[in-house]
Image (cartoon, rainbow, N blue to C red):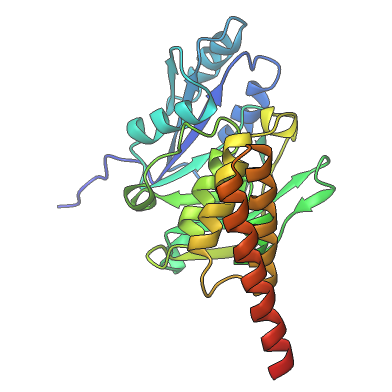
Length: 276
């Protein structure tokens, strides 16, 4: 007797708020996928435009679409709610103003997942604001200076059991914080695929505001996680940035400690150069 699987392979989580002008394009790009083993979760923050009406209309021909509408604390709170509600083995977070790149995008990713054993799969996005295809395979040093778009990443559910959910302390760049957690972890397997996943609209809040709390903490996170993974030059840059941040915060002790750490790494670099 065959057993019918009662849960979807993939859950696509879309936070929305007053997204009436874009959400239909996003949903249609999913509706038109050749891959169908999925569910779609609209996590809406109590929009006061026609976002929900549009979603409900599409729901009539797209029964795997579920709509949750209630006030939230921002995009990452909505994404965290999606993690809790989602039934899929894999999770994908999509912006309400983004769209999947082509109708076979999910099928190609599914085939790759089936043939390999990774917990995170990431590819590229296409964005006018980011000058085309962004941004290839990442290294530890590359992730220290720029982020992987969450629209390019597929997570196995087990990842969030190891890393926890998105940190609501960071209102704009909590996804970068989370990317540092899994990318630098030896307990989470990851793979890059040379494939454009989504058309990324670089018009969100992250493109127009600065997450001062994240940048304040990022240097410390990278300092401790980067041992053996990032270069001495990168450590010097981290110490320099952290020292400047401490100076802005009027923290003389921290400024001095970071400056001292920078001097130590500069000495280490010079000694290595002499040895070579």
